[in-house]
Image (cartoon, rainbow, N blue to C red; front, side, top):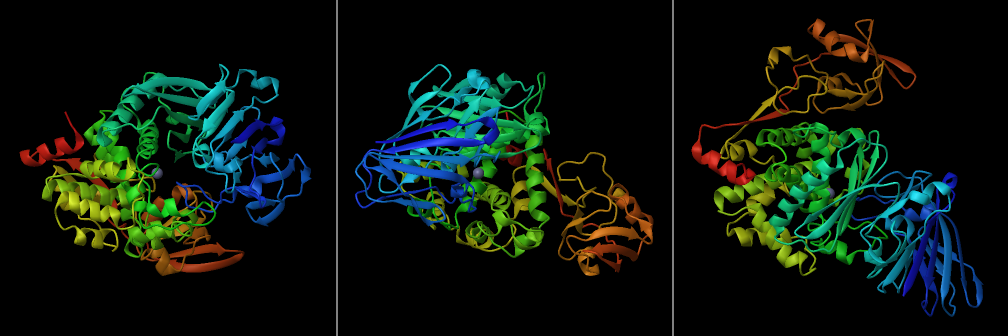
Length: 594
Ligand SMILES: [Zn+2]
């Protein structure tokens, strides 16, 4: 048995103290390590760098830990039990790390809990201890760990089957707002930490409907409890999936305000995030790439299947909002139009395939620089579009759909725990559909072609139309009463909105690139007149033809000639078409429109 005790120390120090007891250490000496990365976030994070002190002792006396590499400590052979005490710095307010102060304490297992090598298959317990500070008297604990002996606030002992199970349940402590609901008889909870005025009962009602729709899709809800752990801040956004819970961070205005009727854009985003992480409880936490089952958490593990796990999940996260009746079909098409616009604006999609995007996630998608739109494609966004194309293609040509593929995937790889091999998804889909899909995958997954969405959507009563962007904020979607004549000329760059504007990105083939403008340049004057960010569209519109531009690159002044051009038609809008009854019937079935 492995025993952990975790306690936040004085809030000003942002430290967790952890005590680990290994009853019977490895006979030749015990190694201990923290993961270098966590599934769901394909970047080397090196959690061990936050360990600030580590001491060990056995019944023979103190032991001297020797560092083996960046994340592993080794202790000499000793007779058990082995007691290790260490302190971890926790000042990363994200779903992936650990964070503690006088308001709350949060940790994601890999950030805090050492793995005892060779003993990680053993069952463990973890005792969550209340911090000593007076303000923590009314704190509560939120976690999906199985409670063994806990008080009314949730402090006390929890158990886990093994180390892998232990680190898959994040823990939140603080003054938490809490709501509960049930899905298929399984208790679910939502906790919110941070200042807010959100209507949590409304959130619970909406999530119950979304979770129900997802459980219906897979036909099974394979757990005893589930928790949404939400941290609210002014402007953050992100989520991390776990087997029986998810950690979310969102902006407070994304929570539904009391009295809100149809979800606004901000609340839709939060519902989409919740729908996404919940979908992962089946798809990536239980149906898993074989590569992840074989690889450890010490170094990068590569798979070409991230588009299957993240792209398909991204397709369903918005789709579930309409299928569960939370948003209208029209609102759904706007969300889809945003995704299309995001993908269509990057020429990187012609240089990197979806399969490569996932394989190289470690050094490219998760380490994006200013050239990202010209060089890479997102396995989330393009993955969602290919999932959509696959779903519509299967409905039209094979009399089946992606739901059926997902259920089969669940039966063969989720329920059984048998990892999905690299070619497994394509093979299974072709087999279930009974048609040859090799061209489809060759073009849109392993090649760089755009999926034929205009044609596919038309067969489902949805018209796809591309137009130039109206302004810098235009993300696509329906634009009522919009006249193309209003479109200001375009430079083919993004800037930070400051004055003078600092260039953040330069797009392939645009006027800025032709003129030699580079990321980092500060744009000073156009035809001798100072550039203010807010006025730039009007300044560009004022005079046609080549313009004289002054800029700073580093500390050197450059003068260039730039010719603003008409913006490309890279902004997508989708409209419901009611003319063709067969197409409308297909759409109703696809979106479950009533
Ligand atoms: Zn995801």
